[in-house]
Image 1 (tube, helix red, strand yellow):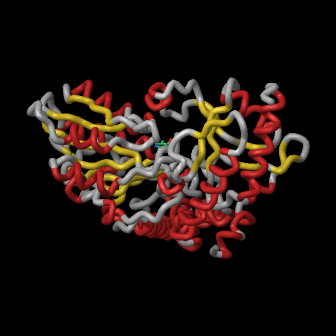
Image 2 (cartoon, helix red, strand yellow):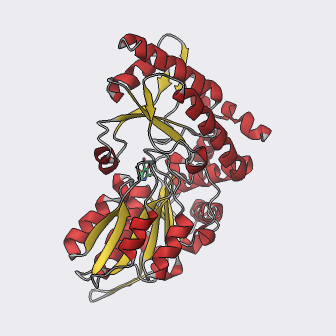
Image 3 (cartoon, protein in one colour):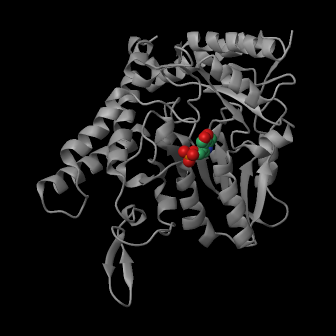
Length: 414
Ligand SMILES: Cc1ncc(COP(=O)(O)O)c(C=O)c1O
């Protein structure tokens, strides 16, 4: 393994914390939000300490520096996804990016003759906006099923794409990597299938961007949305890479300063693409932090990051499968999953599992992970999820497994 990756844990100051009577913090909640390396924290502080000024407006040194830094950061973020700056729209997070497509494109392009397809394994962020925009436009909202193994049913997708009811599929929205069961979906194939019937393709990349090398052109999609805070960057910044085809059809959703060309009392014209989607003062420090996170991940090498994640997933599946009374959710084939392992413990509520683990210093997430349709389908009241990032180790997994033995003894599970 890449030695930089092997030694990177030391770059994350928070991981040296001890909690609950000096137990080392074992952070296995990176799918909710990742920790930040010191270079990202420093970059944000340096921006505010030395360069802070509003962009595009001031004709002074700091204004020029800030504008230059903002554009450079945008370029670096776009490059990380194999795209160019004019294909990048920065938002607060994945949720905002997906909503921008729903309200800036779908609202004006859908009618009763159209269909939007999503899937049962979506995070609510890639489900509710489509459900809502369909309600308002009269378009049909359809949901592709997930198989018992936790994979997308591609036959069901094909049936929903090739319709016999005369309706047209206008958009397919699918998650790249499930945050609930870790499934990695074949998004390149899905994009090809959807484009064959003329539909736009939106990929929720919130959980793939931190773990997989992403080349937007190779995905063949129209939109790839991501959150900075899940990929070692700060909270409050994220975005999407958008195809020219989609960009040209989108309308601004937020109006005001920064996004205009000319304003008169009769009429306003808008700035060029993609500036017309940046209304008001942008989060420059957030962009700086995210660009630094992208540089940090690039330095670790995303192919190695992917490989390292796979090793951790293989190890976790093996160790957790050996714990009696535990049922792993999703596919047991590590080639089909990325980033996390969720499970149920017989007769113990997920919140109780998480609370006992917390007392052992282990941070995991419990609940429905914003995937209620999936949890409801399989009748899981709630699940417990351990999720990884570049700083996670097999030792973290070992502590988790000992913690599970403690949970079992607290709840008298043999
Ligand atoms: C797959 C997936 N999509 C979307 C989101 C929403 O991300 P955010 O809250 O950063 O908008 C998440 C967050 O957990 C996620 O895991």
